[in-house]
Structure formats: structure tokens, C-alpha cells
Length: 475
Image (tube, rainbow, N blue to C red; front, side, top):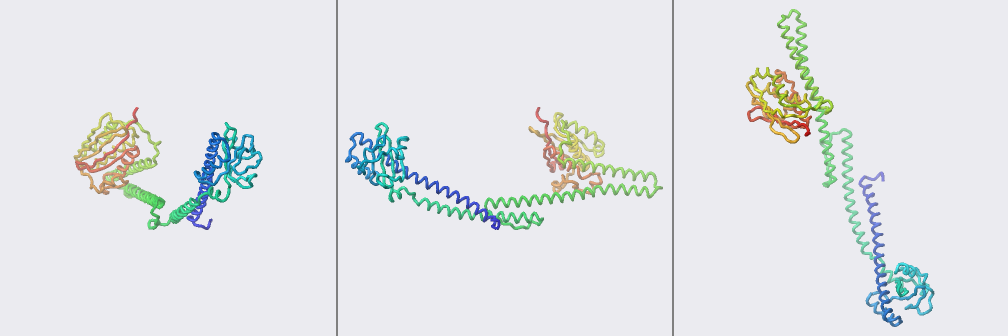
């Protein structure tokens, strides 16, 4: 068995089970058919016993009457001439249609004992001590008269053939079984082929081979479809893992690059100051101020990286959800950014009801509105308006709209705005002090709270962010 292919082992296993089932079915059907024919013959003889009892009850028992009855019954029932024996309860034989001699007591005969117990009985192929041949006996007990009438037929070749099971159903069973075995062989062969191909696929996948160009043709059936789905799912998982690894490498490179710029600037300014001890105080202060600006940028960058890292861990235990009044938070952000808003002659419009409250972590919700505000201040343009609206709510979520009427961005940049370190204008972004992580933090913070976020070009020409935040649970 070990040297056989999977399909062969599967076919042999199913074949053995199938043959066992067919054998049990044939055996059951054979005995059922034989029992049916035996019961049918017994029913005919029992009816004859009853008819003879009724006849003798009204006309009395006579040899001529029984002979006439046997002849009439033979024509009606279509069976050979039966033998009738009348026996009293004590086993004494009072009449036998084929033996006029004195007969032994029949109380010990099995069909007589059972008939007196159950009312009727039959025995197949019992040897008659009187006639010295085998008979099929059917006895009926009439308790009111204390009489047992027994009919019997010689168990010869003709009767055994009549009780024999028809061979036609066996032939049909064999023919159907043969067809089913052919179908079974084809199916097990296809199953074996699928498992063989899957085994090859997993062997190559386990060894790290490239499976993208692997041409595996599975049968066009349910199992083949399942195998194709497995291969496709593996390919998608493999591709997803490769994408994650690539994004991780890219993120590491971006972080390294973003950290390198401020560190290099700080190092350069400090080296210049150290190499020029006689540098004028004004120039030294200017260099130190630039070092401070780069240090602040480095601090902001590290803070944003740590914020994203904490959200990526998806550990909700490090965040505490509280009831947050959005209008109060927006008032705080407006106060903190008031100087920048005045410098760029921008308006901060808050169309949010004082009753709007969300259930979330304060620091993350603050990051959402603060980063969107800083982004609009930096890029919307001079003299523009920032508008925050509460536009809808349902049983679980508040929906907010954050928009500006500034210059906006080219539509081709919209799908990438939430990517980490993505910049529409890299040189201008760094000049304005952006880390490239603000919108990534916005998206992750919204998703962290089970919300959704979208960005599009506003009708006024700037950017429009639509996002949802959770409501407090109903008390």
C-alpha cells in the first residue's frame, strides 16, 4: 500500500468500503426477498386453512368434501395439490388427506406447538416422519373448536424454485455497481491528481522557490476550484508579506533620511561655531537659532514616529477613552495656532454644536484636528478659511468635515496623502517644517477608533476631509 499512489490508495479504500456496503445490501435484499416469498406462500396456505375450517364447520368433515375443496383451491391459488391434516389440541390426528393410516401424536411437531402458542405458524423444509419427505408446513389453531388445521406442500425442486430469490435484482445490482465503480475510479483519479499537484506546489513553496510562474492546472470541478483558491490565497499572503517587508524597508529608509537631515544641519552649524571661535556674536546666535529649529523639527519627527508606532501595536490599554467635547477642543487648537493664523490672515470657522461629544482618547483626537489644522495653515495659502463642520450622526458615529478653500493638490496625489513621509512638494514641505507623518497619524487615529476617513478636492478648490468618530455609549 505504501508504494501505491495516493489516488490508488484512495480508490482501494473506497472500493473496499463500497464492496462491503454492496455485500451487506445484497445479503439484506436476498433474505428480504426470500422472506417475502415464504410469507406470501404461508399467507396462501393460512387462507386455505381458514376456508377449510369454515367449510367443515358448516357442512361437517368428509373426505369427498376435502378432495373437492383441494381441487377447487388448486385452480384458484395456482399451487400444487396441498396436503391437509386436522389435529386436535391433544395432538391426535383426526384426518389426513394423503394418509389414511393411524398416525402418531403430533403435539411435538414444531409447527403445532407454535400454532397453539401464537395462533399460526409455518416451518420450511421439515422432514415428515410419516411420509418420509420434506414439507413446507403451515398450521392454524382454531381455539373455539380446539382444532388445528395444517396444510403442507412437498418441498421439492419446483417449490424450492418458487421460493428462490429472483436473480434479476442481483444482475441489476452488479451492473449499477460496475457503473458506480467506473465513476468512482475517475473521481478518485482526479482527487489524487489534485493532491499530487498540491503536494508539488507546497514542496516548491516550502523550499522558497518562486511560485509566481508556476503553471498548475487543476481539474474543472469543486476540488479543483478549492485547490486554485488555496494557491491563490498563498500567493496573496506571500505577496502581502513581501509588500510588508518592502514597506518596512522603505519606512526604515525614510526615517533614516528624515533624521539625517536635521542631525546633519545641527552638526554642521555646531562644527562651524567650534571651528570659528572669533565668530561674531550675531552670526553665532543665528547658527544656534537654526540648530534650535532643527532640534525642534527632530523632536516633532520623533514624537510623530512614536505616535504611529503605538497605534501600530494596536494595544488599546495604553490609551484611555473619555468623553471629549469637540468644540472645546477646537477652541484650544484655535488659541494655540492663533499667531500662525494671524500671520497668514486665515480664518478658523467652527460649525460644531457645543453638545457634540465623542468617546475616544484625547491625545489621538487632538492629533486628528491639530494635524489637519497645521496642514491647512502650511499649505492652504494666505487669506484662506479653515472650516470644521459636524454634518451628520447615527446611533454609533459622528461625522465631521474638515475643509479649506485653498490651492488644494493635483488629484493624482489624493490616493497617497495618507502614506507615511509622502510629500506633494518635498522641498517646500521640509522648508515649512513638516515631518511627512501628519496625515498618516490622522488616518491611523481615525481607524484606531473604528471610524472611516476620506479625502477629496473640495468644491471651493481646497482639500476636504470626511471622517467619523465614535459617540459615547447610550446610558
